[in-house]
Image (tube, rainbow, N blue to C red; front, side, top):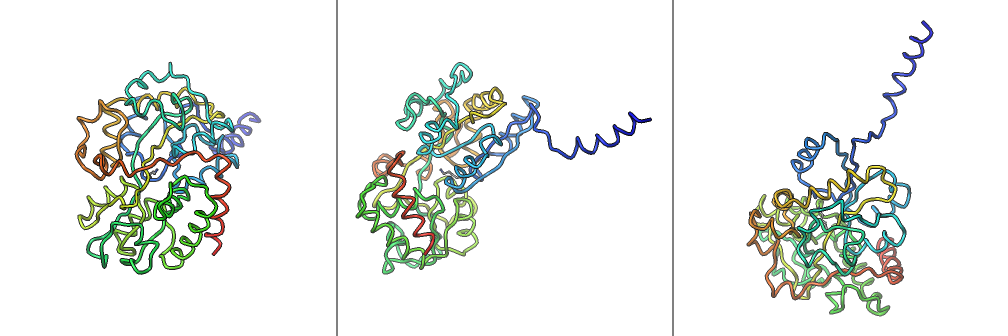
Length: 342
Ligand code: N2P
């Protein structure tokens, strides 16, 4: 009788605390950045459950990891320029490539990236660009320059700025004719003034997914957007266009990394390996509209000739990667804090 009573007390207690099972893979990813069927297929294949949390602001995602989130997830998908900082702090694992045989499927330009030589800590997931998406039925003039944000005389209608600090400050730097990675104090002072003024005239800041939703909804005529999000918005409304401004913009990769505190690293390795299967890689890129780093997937890519996802050489020549600025990042943070406070 007593034992029976103890069970009655225990059962609700056990079900009340959500236990993180060994068969659960917890992923922290950008929003709208992994097709549902790619997740479900892996769950079925491995008889596991995937728990997915999403973010739109990489700096906020880093803060969450630093505040203890690094033990809440197994796998993260994160911007190239943040890999170095996470590796230096020991937040992400040095990868054992013997557990990722499909690593050999990565194109050579992705296997040994400058921000993470020999892919020691990360594996490229997707690549893309950041430019301007606009509604040709709503803009009042040409959209070919970052001036539509930064020069009131060239404004074409209501616009949104991007939540991602490095991208938004990079756009202002390119508008000024500087590198997106410049830490020159005079240039950053100008960037600060440009952004304070643009913020005042804008409809606010938005993350990538939110920005294209607001564009589709007509709340903005032009937004700073990531190529794949823009591509999918164009499929919904052909009046949406995407352009790399003439001053230039960024090209980036997002990479997979395993958190050092993950107790399910083995499962995370399996997932990374799965994403590098050509059929799966094709499914990912066909689903979210970004570039694949797996050449063997290319024949299966529906939009392989679309210049929004795979820009032609003359556009590529205007693109720059965001670098890991290490100490230089402090100057960016200071400017951004002032812009946000004004
Ligand atoms: C997807 C966000 C794309 C990632 N909504 C930008 N690096």
